Image (cartoon, rainbow, N blue to C red; front, side, top):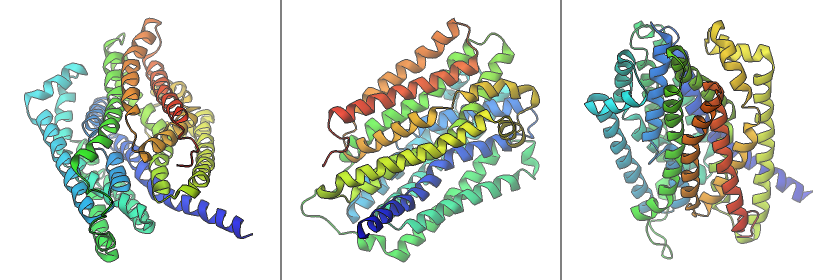
Length: 453
């Protein structure tokens, strides 16, 4: 009886840790969906969606080192003392300012011409893109600090404050966005609506978390130093996150390469615009529905971070069971939205404001997402095991394979006259399947699957 109570308690703890991580990982696709909705009243919706899609691709690519997912892992895996904490804060802040400088350069100088050439952008698309990328430049810096603070709170099991911060960000994002849609920005400069709402929610959340740190005296709980452990230096941070950064950069380059190849292989101007605008809609909708699985990666590192040798195997098996349950739930959700016509129509026509004319264009590519939860669940769990062990070198191999496939697959599909939307969707699925398979095999060969540590 006592053992069954203990097991139920452990699963409750896993679920409690998972909730704020779920909000963190769901935030990006929700932001993108809200951003898509905010462009619905633009003078030219297709142009606005195209500019937003390209801005999102470039912004995501530039935030690869250091990204929010890397920031949270730095604070979970590497921060154990007060000195470690300040080293991590300085590092993520500095890298955020570097990213901001690159964004400003692309938005305000002729260097941005490269983006226009790569995506074959028209002048009106370029103007909107420049405004958006320059305006959003500081969001990466503030967001990394915010997520990093949540990582340390989660590691020390102050989950309630992480959950409250996530809810605050989500509510502010929705309220500010729909409030701005009632202003003149809804028809002019619509690209600024998602930018302003992003700043509002990030700043509010960061201030809230700083208050939580002061109230809980988190820095006071941390030891000044650990005699048996050297202080955290920037080289150790780089050794862990550079392979992760290469992996994320590759994942962010995937849509860049896909959009560029598909746009240049499009048969006419109409297909060219559809590929960028509506492939973006399909992909971000699919990612929104399965995004909860991305919380599995930090969940693994947090739950195993305080593990002793004798209980590693039991904790590992609990994580496996919890991940299978999560994948099953997500699978049911995406099957419902992909294969029940009423739900599919509600999602694209009523919610995302896709026109009736374009509805049939997006429905079949969206059905290809049916089995994606299995792949992404396996991928994120395997990635969490790799990061927990601090052995991230294999991610460089994944990056090379994915980069090759992202350029090769859409070109091969274009040779057999496959539709751009279907080609892009199939390419994304196969690329991520390859990464999941590589990580699974690597963990198995190196005995990281269910090992006793």
